[in-house]
Amino acid sequence: MINFFSLTNKQPLKNRGFTVIEILVAIFIIGLTLTSLFSLYGISLKTTTQNKNKIAALNLASENLEITRAIRDDNWNNIASLTMGTNYHLNKNDSNKWIFIQGAETQKGFTRKVIIDNVSRDTNDNIVTSGGVNDLNTKKITSITTWQDQNITLTAYLTNWK
Image 1 (tube, rainbow, N blue to C red):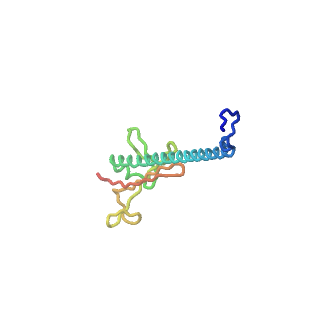
Image 2 (tube, rainbow, N blue to C red):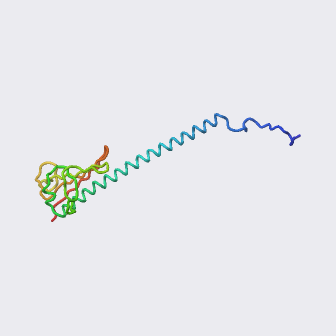
Image 3 (cartoon, one colour):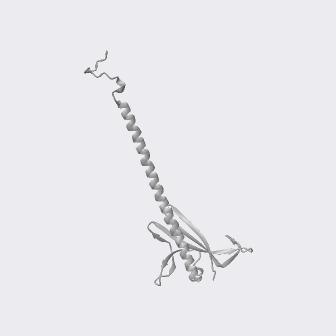
């Protein structure tokens, strides 16, 4: 006979709720998950910052090459008359024209410079790194941007096309 009016509640032990061990395991799992998520966030933030710096450095190095091309287009002698193998940076003069100034330029944690070198050609008119004849109408332009312990280097060959 079933007594529906019993005042005692006799449930089996397994249905009484969480034990202390179950609670500790749940806290451990949640803590491990949160720690992993925060580590992943830190790595993502570091990678984003590194990529931002690489893009900024690439833009600065590209800008140096483009300005050097503009100077070449204005007057080839502005490039040909420089001391080869010397570090230069670019700046505007009083006439608002770009000019080369000796030394590197540091701006917002980035240091950039342009190096102009002579170009030699072999008997087949190919550019060579050693030997050959100096080509007075071609210059090698190297644009270098450095920050922290990294750098971006871009190289271009410019000719006196006029």
